[in-house]
Length: 211
Ligand SMILES: C[S@@+](CC[C@H](N)C(=O)[O-])C[C@H]1O[C@@H](n2cnc3c(N)ncnc32)[C@H](O)[C@@H]1O
Image (cartoon, helix red, strand yellow):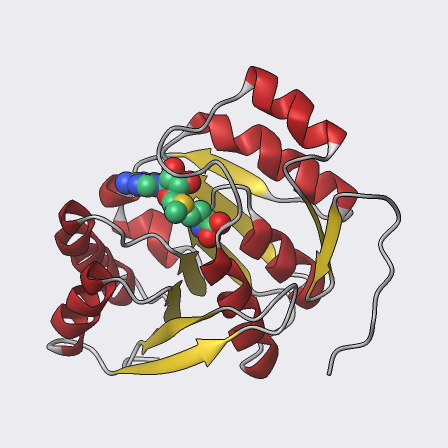
């Protein structure tokens, strides 16, 4: 069992070494009055905790260069920066998520670069500049499957070492895994988190066979 971590004030959660803010926290309430994400980036999703747990058991090298796709509030970016001293870029289509990410980074004393971009349009050079690409709950529409498969291909050709994506187990995610498996070795595993709660889902790790 994880060590009990007391939180400093109400509506603060602690998971995998990262402080997170709940919807009733005054900072989040203030942000919500000004910034309303519109592509499902209005909270931290459970798959983010699956990915954190997976990375605890399958750690990144210290100081790794990481890109988080569809970062939303940036819980995974914050975790990677905190746990692995990673140099992280959080990418999201929706600029409204970044004020939440900035607050999360600030309260956890980490620095995260952000890029407002459609991940479908990220160039091979952008992707290949990062050793590791991560994402949680980013394959939730049929229209995202094909572009994410192509993104994997561009990243692998550009020498990204591995891509790790967590998901609650949506049909679109399995379709993504099936299509990627036709071209690249991958490991798809059922996984669960233990902090801040038990959430179950899947994590896929796609390795670059050239590395
Ligand atoms: C379900 S949320 C997950 C957020 C975060 N990864 C988490 O687990 O808490 C999906 C996120 O992907 C972003 N997103 C959706 N389509 C995108 C695209 N084509 N390019 C970049 N970001 C995208 C949304 O704005 C949103 O922040």
